[in-house]
Length: 331
Ligand SMILES: Cc1cc2nc3c(=O)[nH]c(=O)nc-3n(C[C@H](O)[C@H](O)[C@H](O)COP(=O)(O)O)c2cc1C
Image (cartoon, rainbow, N blue to C red; front, top):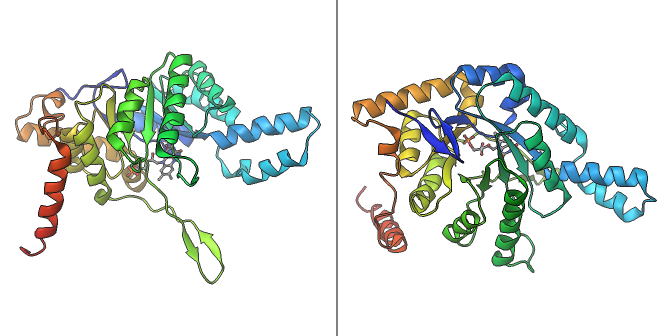
């Protein structure tokens, strides 16, 4: 069975890889992921705030510092919140790269144009074969329009494409006003791939303690359909390749993501729960499923359930919506 795929310009033997996560913090786990057949290794993110904090700290040590800088610094998470600081991240990236033969994709996580983006070049120098840019943000500024946010993000992508020779994937949130338009803008800006989607971690509040509570809940397959919808809409309509991230736990999930258009299948929660060997199992079960259904290659199956042939996805979505509501009566 030919499971080969091209994702963000990288030719891979199959689409399965770990998504950005702490799985890569430990070299033994990285080796176990490679042994389980991971097609690539995606590093966890280096955050804009970490880099900015370090840059401000350097400034404070070298310049006469005003109180406003010290105050700005106090908003950032302190270094002990992160497994690796910016320089350690680059060193670890070099170690991961030396330890495995598969491509290593570094991850930068931030939302503004600024000096922190220089780290993309450092990542490239440290051996990264690709860069995943995570644009995780919540639009809280009443003065900033959707169009302004999109332009800011597209400029970041253009800037990275201008300065790097390695491919760039953009990890998106599903909450843009016009998802298809945003995807097309990043495509035009030069993104080699889009990763669908970031998970939004929703903090709760503790009314007794008057505190915000954070609990990181791993995903399950119920998070997949949101990704399937947008894979199906975007597949074949943009030249960037597509990765699914979120809700892939089983071979059935992987088959659905590929049928709707995924070139790469990223898993995190499933690997954190079941260990790196789960990647091998999902890959083997996907292959067995494809054989049983007489597919000859991944390319043949990919996008077979996309909406490219649908003249008007908007009308189709409305129809689905109405049918879904009516189906309650037919239970
Ligand atoms: C513990 C943990 C750490 C994560 N760290 C990162 C990160 O550093 N950068 C990033 O882009 N995504 C990060 N993610 C998000 C995952 O890459 C992925 O998008 C998300 O978990 C959805 O995929 P899943 O359903 O397979 O878990 C993290 C997820 C978990 C559970």
